[in-house]
Amino acid sequence: MLVIVDYGLGNLDSVLNIFKKIGTNDILISGDKEIISRATKLILPGVGSFDAGMRNLEEKELTPILNQKVLIEKTPILGICLGMQLLTKRSEEGVKAGLGWIDAETIKFNLDPTLKLKVPHMGWNYIKVQKQNPLIDMDSKNRFYFVHSYYVKCFDENQSIATSHFGNDFTCMVNKGNIYGAQFHPEKSLKFGMKLLENFAKI
Amino acid sequence: MALKRIIPCLLYDGSGLVKTVKFKNPSYVGDPINAIKIFNDKEVDELIVLDINASKEKRKANFHKIADMASEAFMPFAYGGGVKTFEDFAALYKIGVEKVIVNSLIQENPNVIKKVINDYGSQAVIACVDFKKSIFGKKLPYSYLGNKIKLSMVDYAKYLTNEIGVGELMLNSVDLDGTWEGYDYESIHQLLNSVEVPVIACGGCGSINDLKKVLYETNANAAAIGSMAVYSKKGMGVLINFPNRESIILE
Image (cartoon, rainbow over all chains, first blue to last red; front, side):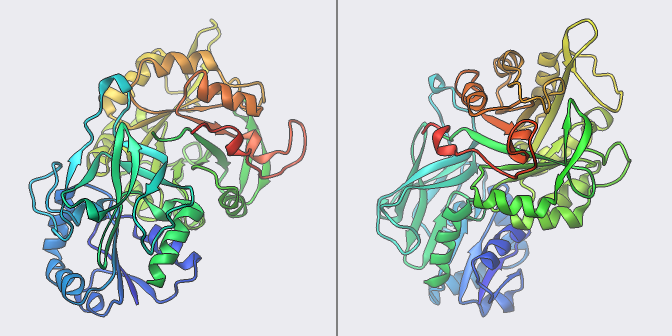
C-alpha cells in the first residue's frame, strides 16, 4: 500500500492522479498515523516553506511514525520538492531542524548576477544521473519540471545521485538506502515523471 | 538553465473550448478534457485554461470541471477566470492547479492577491495583462470589464511585480488575438526590459518562425499559442495540435 503523506502541504491530488494513470491502484492520501504505519511505500510531497513543512509534521505528530517507518522498518520513501528538502538536516529558508535522514542541508540559490538568472528556478530542465539507481536510467535524456528557490547540498557526496544546472550544477536527486528525494516534480513531468514514479512503485 | 516554454492557451466559455479573434466572435473548438489528453500525448511544456466568461457572467470558476481538467494534465497547469476570493485560490491549488491567472481581480481586490502570494508564493500567481491600441494609437492595458487602468503598460507591469508581487506576467495582445500575424514583438521586448519576472508572450502566433522569434530574438521566457493549438491552419478546421518542440526549443 503506497501512502501519500498528507501533512497539510503539497499538491496531493496531482501525485495521486499520476500514480492512478500509471496503474498503481493500492494507493491513498493520508495523514493518519495508523494508516501510515501500514504503508509499504511512502511519498512525502510538498509545496511551501521549510518551517511550515516541519511545523505541520510536528503538529500532526507524524515525525515519530515516519522515523519508525523509514529508519527502522526501511520503508521506501520518495520526498518530492519541499519533501526532498525536509529530508535534510536544516534549511537556510527557516530555523527548524529537518528530518535529518540525508547528510545534507538546504541552501538558497546564490547566483552570479552577470548570468541574469532569476530565482525561483522555474521551468523544465535536463538532469544528469551520476549514480546507478532504481528510479531513473543513467543514459536516457530526461527533463523534468522544477520550481524552487532552495536546493540541497550533500555533505556526503555519495548520497547525491543526479544533478541539474541553474547557474551552477546542483543536486536534484538524493538516495540513501530506502530514502529517495527528487527536487523536481515528477507528477508534473509527463512521461519522464511517469517512468520515475513507475520505477519507485516497483521497488 | 530552465528551457523556454511553449504553452497552449485554451479559452473556456463555461461549457466548451472556444477561439476568438481580437477577443470577439468565439467559435466552438471542442471539449476541454479531450484537448488536454491530446496535449499530454504531445508533451506540451505547460497548459493554460482561461474561463473568458466567468467574470463577465459574474459566476465562480467551475471547480468540478477544472478538477477534471487538472487530473488529466501531467504538466504544470495554469487556470484563470472568475477567481475572486482567497478560498477560490486555495480550492484551485488543492485540485491540482499550479498557477492561478488573475486579470480583473487586480483592479477589484489586489489585497486578496497579495495574501495569496504571501501564503502560496509568488510563483503561484500569474498576472495577465491584455493590451490594445487606443484610438490615439498608443498601446495600453485593456480591461473588457471597462475598468480603466490608468497606467502605461510598463508602469502597470512594474506595479504588478513590485507592488502586488506576482511571480510571472502574461502579455496578451487583443489586436493580434486570433490573427496568425505574429506576436507584438516590440511591446513584449519593452516589457521584458522593465520587469524581473518571467514573461509569457500571447496573441497572434501564426507559425514556427513566430515562436522562434519571440523566444530567441525578443527573448520572452515562454510563448503561448491559441489558434495554432486548435486549428490545423489559418482558416481551416479544428485540430488539436502542438508544434514539434524539438525543432524550436534550444537546449
